[in-house]
Length: 283
View (cartoon, rainbow, N blue to C red):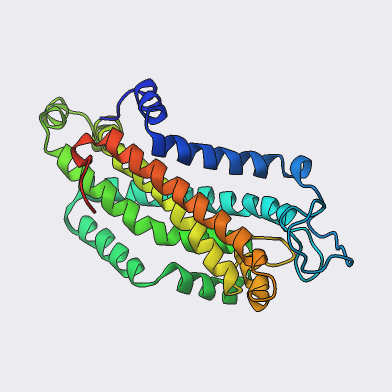
């Protein structure tokens, strides 16, 4: 059973790593929401007098090879990072959680079929799926979200199924069955609320993976199509100038590292709070 929301929030605020993670995520979120107000320059404005410049008062993080302000592009790229993380994980939850619940509730050959399909999906890495989708329907934000979301489905389905199997064997579920409750009612009212905590943790960790995967897709050229700035295609554009202007690669690299770290720290703290049995386990 999930602890009360106020208890979870209070424990998170007393956990330093969780506070750090939430602070970073909040900072990125504010930057993404108020990008137009906080960007010092338009992302596509070109300053031909400062091509590949280092940090200056005019351009705090320098400029790229076209004279575009790195800080402005970094802020705008946070929108894509958050959209992909939320969209991909949301897609994984919407598909994976019901599949895991149905698998346990019905059982038998349905359970076997669903799990074998999940095993088949795991074989194909999200990067490969994204390349295939990009070839079929073109590079876009939707393609990236679908590709990473599909990769999340098997893990969320498996976690949900594992937790639901344990809950289904408890006495209160047997009592509900004896009282004549339908399978759907038992699944939604009794099994899901008691199996959701690990899903929340996995979803939080999955957001960090989604940010990293989106950056990788952008770096190899199958992510969101330029001129829309993303942290991945910023790294790709900066790679040829790594020795000439290393700051151009450092900025998006640090942004990716901090946001992924923030999601991982928050997910780790949530795991300790929602499932105290795992606290202190070395992984």
